[in-house]
Length: 173
Image 1 (cartoon, one colour):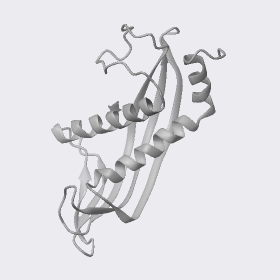
Image 2 (cartoon, rainbow, N blue to C red):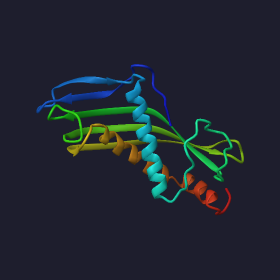
Image 3 (cartoon, one colour):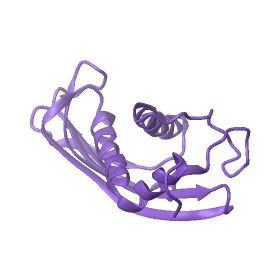
Image 4 (cartoon, rainbow, N blue to C red):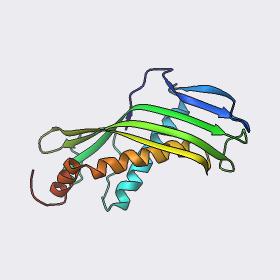
């Protein structure tokens, strides 16, 4: 998972308080916290793929290396844009509060063929979610719901489905 943002690029706004008025802009600043975000997105994708029945090798820093697993394809994602507009009415973070608002995440999915040694599919999606009544937990949960929508769009793609058939021993493309 790669995040393609400029340092201090605006990612949205967070407000707090009962009227959601006091707040500040969110900006991308590569820190331990943002590394945590990319790990959360990666973990969410891995969980989704595992639930769909895919056997996943351990994550490797050598993205296009051959490795020892028998997979025919490797899936990568570039996070192109994040936009979050979240309010924490109680004014505190953590799992005991409700966050409400909206989030969108633009993702470019890339499918790399080990046999062809190249990216064979690039698919851009926009995962978008609105939580006007709020969700229990941290504000990032709303962004995770938007990412779920981006994953769903990938799996709904007929082009991606054709590659899945190949990877599971179906007809070749």
